[in-house]
Length: 288
Image (cartoon, rainbow, N blue to C red; front, side, top):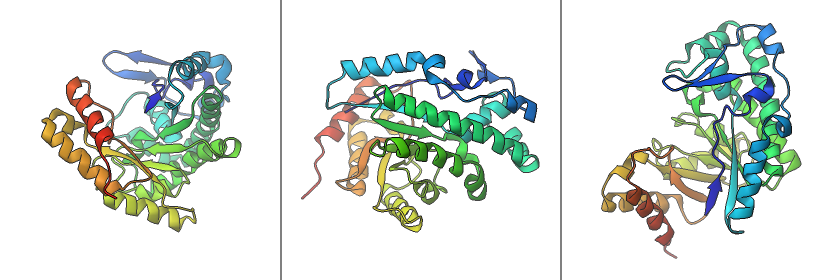
């Protein structure tokens, strides 16, 4: 049904003047940004020179897949990328970026603004090379309180979304945040077309909350939803997979729902179980 160009969310960073390494044990490693002088070294991305391989991959996918198969692009969001720039690596508690938020908020906003402008350009670049939908991932924004989400995450998500819609109003957008149960209305209010739910939210309740968030923000329509099967269910037996998947499909209703997992698939998932999940979804029909 869809084909996603998978690349690390940090891929565009070198094009912004931020180099990083991948350590086998630690993951991404970045020299932490601590001062305004560090931020001044960042610059607006030119994806055609810094990430031509992304364009090549997207064009190849568009040529190879069938016309009815959507090609999806994706970008990380400013707050999540900023966690790597400020922490210097993956974190569990995100104390360094929170310390910056509470002691030097203007510095953090400067980093976020730079990231948002470049990530918006990176999203446009993907559309111009074959992506027909853009997913934006603010994976670690789920660690923020609602107040801090409103200040440090949502405005910069909106920068990217508005940049996409200004130039390509018909390109759908999707947002995802892990452990976002407290933020669903806020996610919906950004104007994104589809909110991805993780598995910690009931699908029926999630749909109601997305619609409420959009209405409060003055947006038309109930909005779309994606998700939200727990990836762990794919380690169950076929009967469990079918029952859990169909429960979500029924609660989501017949329109505006992209069935998916509530997070990435686990590497150890039995392939036959993943195949059965897809088969179950394709065979499901809503009652008239």
